[in-house]
Image (cartoon, rainbow, N blue to C red; front, side, top):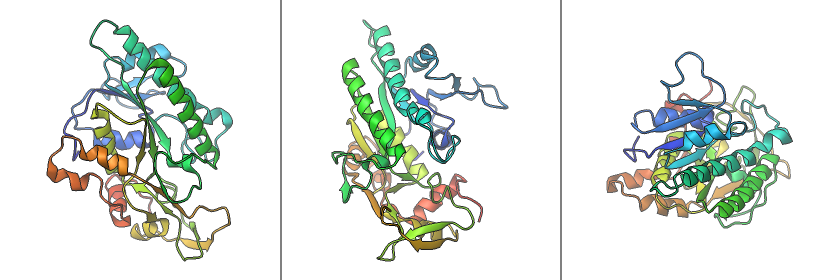
Length: 316
């Protein structure tokens, strides 16, 4: 890792998912107490050797609370995503898991705090993976204070999860941080979803859709830093500065694609305002030389390079 050199003890829910796989790779040499949760026992190696905690967070709250004991943070990445292992179209039953998993993480943090009453043991900070999809088609640079206007079912689900989690955290007296993550290069619908015959929308200005992106290695660095932060805001946009055109990404990766006129409902641009994140990272005790590289402006070439290092690009 480029920063920080160490990690605090943390429980990562959904450790076997796409983001979890990136973190396991990038944090492998961190030498930290990292508890990776998954629902099914991994094939091959012994579960304990790999640091896996195998349980269903919704069906076994006792196991969840035990895994969280002594952790400084619970990072919840769990929940089905469109195009993932759960399939392209998610059912209402699948979507509601995002809310239920978030609430389960909060209950586990409260259990850890209450079990340590009278000691110096506090509650783990809970960080919940949300999505830029909660902003929908809202125009302009989207700050954390922008009213939510989700369009797609996944965005609606994440917005409902946020609302429920904030309300429950307030009731329990817990700290919670909602991470509104932009597109992640290599596990997105473009680089990660490319296949022969791939087609992109093209708008009247000749541009393909533009989005806020973050490289997978940069994401791992950012999340590692957030786990170490003693004080976090309730909501945080997670992306690199700038906009990246999807067509530029595919060209940088050497992946062929066609263009088609964008339909009226297509969203041309989703730009996350990451001023809050930049300020938070700059305030951390890392060497000054590392700060410029901490959150560089996103470029298609750099994003593709990060995805290629982690073998996240499809074969052309």
